[in-house]
Amino acid sequence: MTQPTVPRPHPPRGVLPWLLVAGLLLLTVGYYSLSAPQPSSVAAGRFRTLKRLASFICIRTLRSPVLVGTVFWGALIAHFIESIAAFSYIRRRCRWDSGAGLRAAGWAAFVLLFGFPAFRELIRTIKESELYLAAKKW
Image (cartoon, rainbow, N blue to C red; front, side, top):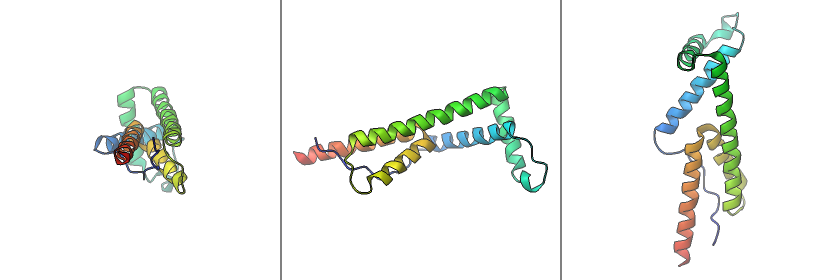
């Protein structure tokens, strides 16, 4: 079977991945505001309201600063592992031509940001390319 080239990276379809990114951003800001020392100057506290809101939501949802940190680091590690898996999947299933490394790095960055929905989109895109090449071969 002929291998497809690495497809151009694009974000996953739908609204849910964007909501998941917003939740991850909220978790990141909440964890940072709970774990970092509070700024003493006015210039350092520009986003004070956002930090307070994020930490309030994280504490109300997860009930413990330790649990907020555990969920944050767990999500970060999971996204990092998914990103490495996406890069490995591309190396295994696609033809490596000029510019493939940059496109594969783009997919890895999307998977690092969006997580599993972007990885699923990558798999779907590569399978569509493989089916197209198989049909074209006939």
